[in-house]
Amino acid sequence: MAAETHSVLYYTCEVLDNPDKLLQALIMDGRGNMKISQIMASKGPTEEGLPPLQSMLLEELNRRTDEVFDNSDEGLLQIFPRLKRSSLSWSLYLLHKRGLIAKRRVRVNGRLTTVFGCHKAVEALKEHLNVAD
Image (cartoon, rainbow, N blue to C red; front, side):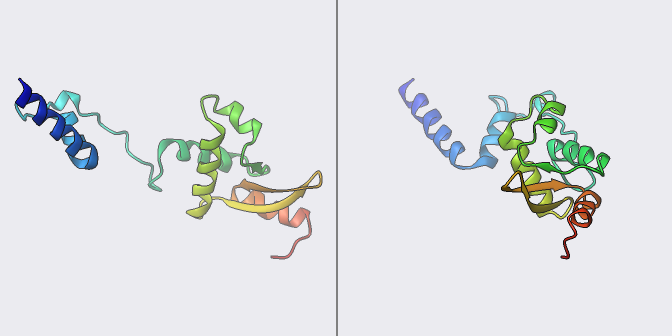
């Protein structure tokens, strides 16, 4: 029994260092056979290659062409009640990094803040502020 435990611990440590082996270990049964029923079928990313959260957020921003949002906007957090502030912030950042949304640094109530929105909304904001860019 001790030798068997040792090999399991060694394999566990080896698996934790290698994500591919971890996935394989999770899918395989004790005899090395893959259980098809245990493999989760992914819904798959959208046509832009986005995770579901970013896809939903992008859809919402594109629907609101006359609004911009800061990175911890209460309105967006109410629309997606299970969304954490940090997830919202990172999702907005990653969508902007891919060029799918625009961002702009503006002064609101005396504080400099970054706002995000669809390209049309940020362009409208620039026109409203009479800013040349």
